[in-house]
Length: 227
Image 1 (cartoon, rainbow, N blue to C red):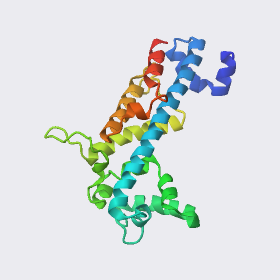
Image 2 (tube, rainbow, N blue to C red):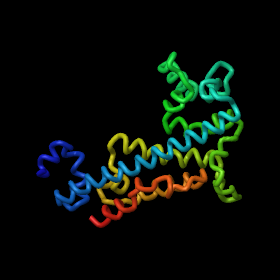
Image 3 (cartoon, rainbow, N blue to C red):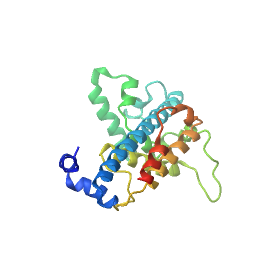
Image 4 (cartoon, rainbow, N blue to C red):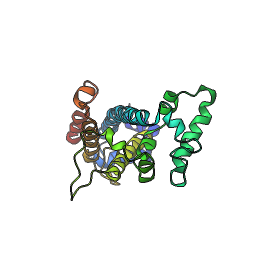
């Protein structure tokens, strides 16, 4: 495909960053765009695996403590999230319950929650409402020290980075540039990939085995760097 046709489909404003990053070499710009798509696909796959893993770990923890329908029950009147500083979480669950209606099952409700929802269970109000037990989903997390606290605040903030990456990819934003600059870089992608691997390790999951055959992120990053 000619670059002029490619640019017409993707738009000048979108492709201009790639052209600038590639020194106005249109063929390299198209290659970089396609590599960014491949990198986004690979990272989204890893994020999806992590999202399922943390969702299921949280579900196991709260099922053991609060019962088989805990996600519905915490949003009911008198439930642990039925309070002012947890009201948004209660409302998210309530809307999902309304949408499910008579088709409700715990599993369907569980899968209707996104990564942002699970992240906010580590926010202080929700974490406290859950009796401060949710860090059990990270059994191999480092122990806190006087200089570094690996507490729920730390997890909450780190999960924001993963959720932001997920949203960037979902909204077709590039992840192969320096922040806010049309300069080719895989630093951001590599850092977020390392964070995802760290989360798996904290959950005592062998990420190498889990992602075997579906993880080519370093390979693609190296190709982008050498372009």
